[in-house]
Length: 297
Image 1 (cartoon, one colour):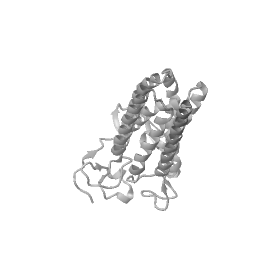
Image 2 (cartoon, rainbow, N blue to C red; image 1 turned 45 degrees about the vertical axis):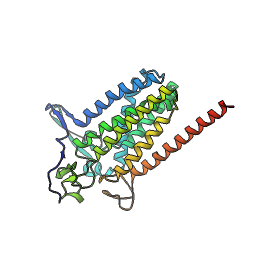
Image 3 (cartoon, rainbow, N blue to C red; image 1 turned 90 degrees about the horizontal axis):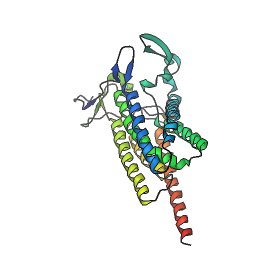
Image 4 (cartoon, one colour; image 1 turned 60 degrees about the vertical axis):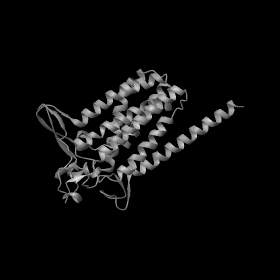
């Protein structure tokens, strides 16, 4: 059993408790991500000759569809946590305890980013078709804010004591309370803070995408879809190896913590999205090459 002092420890999931109303860190981080993402995306939209008002217009449906997608995706693969005796949970609302279906208690954690991306993409698809907006250009404008939001949102896992990795005694180890540990690791105290790994990785991707975005503008070399494809490649590459450290995977045909006899869903999707990004960039470069060939006669 690992017994050395923890380097990182969550203070709890509650930011502010007013008795009749509770503000949780997860919700606060999501709200902050939305605000900063709105600001960034509006600036990027303006630089690509897209009406910044479109960003405000799509925001409500984008948030709702992403949250619904992320939650539904997670609940489908973890239905045992929300069925049977676990179907209902209690909440305190204005000093009244009421019962609600547990799958609605999203503040307790349990969302999957890949489900959020699916939900968000569907929202953007319908919006662009209704407004006659070039979808690849519009997604390129949104993507930097999305990956930054992922970077910020990962800290919600820290406050909820979730999404951590295998046991470790490294200097940056994370202490997990016994009630939050999987049964297989009940005697271990310290774990890989995989949320930090992904948060840092995502922030580096954000810096890369922003740099390339403005470089394209400056060099007049905008290729709609390139930023989105690069996001798929970079995020999927990082998520694949970070997912390998986690002990709470969503599994296909296997059982956590290691999906023995099956596959880790996040790694499977990461391979698919990584390949999609590579194929997308290949066709973008092919299209660009053909365009230069025609122009050179």
